[in-house]
Length: 326
Image 1 (cartoon, rainbow, N blue to C red):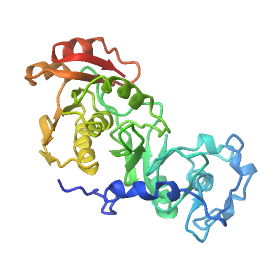
Image 2 (spheres, helix red, strand yellow; image 1 turned 180 degrees about the vertical axis):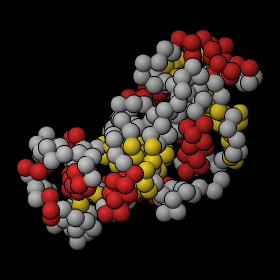
Image 3 (tube, rainbow, N blue to C red; image 1 turned 30 degrees about the horizontal axis):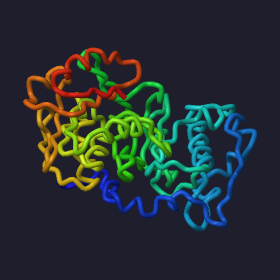
Image 4 (cartoon, one colour; image 1 turned 120 degrees about the vertical axis):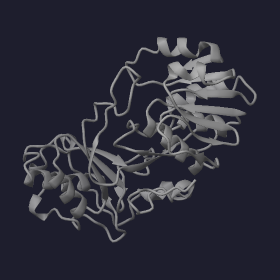
């Protein structure tokens, strides 16, 4: 499969090579400046907004403290009437770092390392932010409290709006079978924040260690994290499925990125990708029993918060020996 981001800046070419330098990507050098801004205090009371530009606080190593990047964005938002001078850094936006990796301290950002998500932002403001702030690679309009994607066949999908730049992000996910690079178009796929230990991955580990080379059905796969973890852990076969096409499509890309040669069909429904020991489907979970003529050792159900999983469990009960609701 050819892996290329539509923005043309090589967002997905880093792949696993990113892991070799991940500890240093966001680390400051000895000359980097920590502005020590307070996140719950008005920015206007802490800093001279007139001085904020692309070079303010930027070190010779070409990195800048995250708070200064957000402060620069807030200055532009104030000038565009999107925020006011009493706005705090905490109320400005949601910073979505890429590649996202658990860090012990606030990151110092290089160029094109953050997607900005803000509620009520305009296209004009977004384009200014993209053009004037080199650390930002894309600007999304949306509310972080609203989950992106499609919960089930009875609900309409929700997406953020990409106003400027590129929303492709990479999450570095530590797992018991090695770290994964999980990419996602953030306008279309739900946000997950990196943690040193993923509770979902740990829950999967407890189950998968009960089997030797199990077969796995990841029937609500999202961008593929748990199913790919299963393959890395020695699963004999994994079938991925998600009703939301952007998630199933990204799963196919993430399989390839993480070392599993993938053939991809650019179709919106049915089998959309496959490899030596896996397949990727875009189907309603309720229809899988009529499509898959096999029985799996483990079935993973990982839904959005608040979704009633009982109907999901009932629909796959005859397809597997053990159901894991994560």
